[in-house]
Image (cartoon, rainbow, N blue to C red; front, side, top):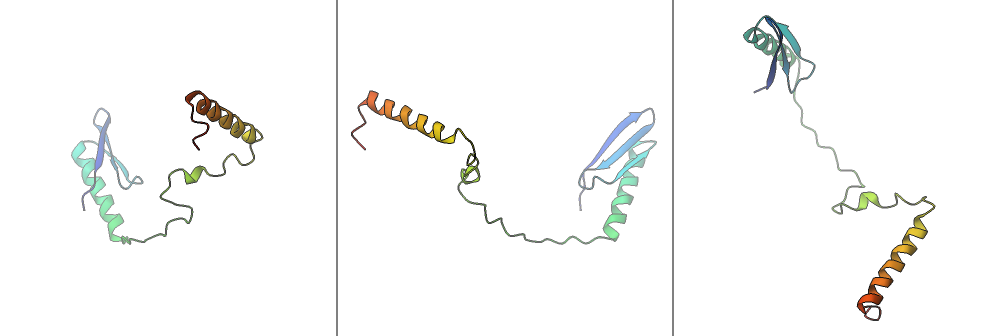
Length: 105
């Protein structure tokens, strides 16, 4: 397997290596080659005691192809909701009146 390792010089002759896919592995050493070797050894320890298992988790029942569905009901208890809806209706009615569309529906 391939692993990305972030090697950082922290001060004179001090380096750290962080294994990007295994954030618990952080090692320090005197040069970049040594920290990479230490990181490789730590990865090997993890691999020796581990198994990769792929599992499928069913999608949540609330997931939908409609991206707006997750917003349904979020203003259910908002005291201004009805007033907001009324104002939207008035606005739409005024636009329809201005454009002569009020009788076309």
